[in-house]
Each structure stands twice: as C-alpha cells, then as structure tokens.
Length: 282
Image (tube, rainbow, N blue to C red; front, side):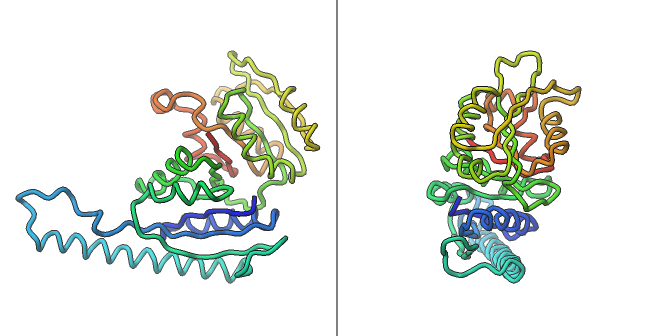
C-alpha cells in the first residue's frame, strides 16, 4: 500500500487517522496524502423562502466561513504536530514514509470519492456520537463510491498495523473483495488467520481460502470458532484480543444495509465499536 488517503475534518479524529496511516506507511514505504475536506459556505444556505432576507442569508454564509477557517486552522495544527512527531519526508521515495497536506473546498462528503479511487486505501478515525454526520458520510462515500478499501482506526489507538492480520471470512462476495484488496498487506504480514464464526448457519470453512493464501506465500492458518452469546462482532473482537491481532479484514455489508440497520450487524459494529483497526471493503 503506497498511496494512503487520510481525509481530515479539523477535529479530534484527525490525529488518530494520521497515526494509523504512519504505521501502515512505514511498514510499506508509503505516502500519506492528508486532505482537508471543507464544505463551501454557500452550500450551507438553506432553501430560502419568504422568511429569509438577504441579511439573514449573509449571516449564514459568514458563520459558515468562520467555521471553515477554524477547522482549517485546527487541521493544519494537527498535521504540523503529527509531522513533527513522525518526521516524514516531503518527497515520496522507495522505502520511506512521506506525506503531503492539501485542502479541498467543495461538496462534502461526495468530494472524497474521486480521490479515494486513485489511492490504495482511505484511512479514517471511526465515528463517535459527537462527530455528527460528516465523518460517517466520508466513510460511507469512500466505502460505496471509492472502489478501494477503507481502514478505520481502533478505539484503543494502536498504530502498529499489519503484522498480525485476521480475515473475518463468511464466503461472501464482499469478503472475497476485501481479501483481494488487502493482498499487499497480507503478503507483508507476519501471520494471517482466516476466522469463520459458526453461528449455526455457517456454510463456510476457512480451508479453501487458506490454501489460496499459502500458494501466494502468505503464512496463513484457519480456524472456525463458535459464536458467543454476545454475537458475531464480539466473538471476532475476543478472538482478535486473544491472538493479539492488529487488523481485521472484513467484507462490508454482506447483508443488506436495511437488515443491518434494523437488526444490527458486524459492519455497523466495526464502524463504531471495534477496539482494533478494521479494513472494510465492498
């Protein structure tokens, strides 16, 4: 993974994403593209009716511009502090961490899709209740429109990612694409474990995927574990903690989004609650 897109929003999640990107980029000699996504203040103007006069509209735009400037200042300060700690090169080169910072003003979150498609992956902090909709919107757009994997930082903040990888395997097309998209990391890992969680309906075994990975020279093993009373997500989490896993590879929304919204699902749990980093792909 050589080109890592790290979207910034000028909030507390920016540093977590940058730190995670550091661990991945150092391991692979990659380049971090930190991009601050800013909403055009004019996009904040509501559909005005008779109750909005020109002065009120101007006030909305001015408030939006002030917020934009605050967020840009915060993002630049976070990037500068990270840059001082990580000491990346300003120029990309073989085997070394490098980084750049740019800002983009335009539609949020849709503006991320084009940049995500030309990066190897997009790295973000997971969503928190106080984040509002913007970070969740960026994650969703990158996942569904970017065509590349999305990596979310774990809640424990670990940045050494890619040494011990777990593949959450259920035989779905989404899981297969997640494996394909993560192959460079799988090949560089010290160990890879294919985990099937048997919830009583499991039709899969890890053996065939393990066989493929071994043919690629990947140090892979497989295991089937029984689902716990807490459900599939917590079963995977517990196995990750037990095996000191630092990255879970997961096919996103292998069930319908409506079903996951109503009944809960592994993807939604990964977006909010996972303690280790998660690579999501569709």
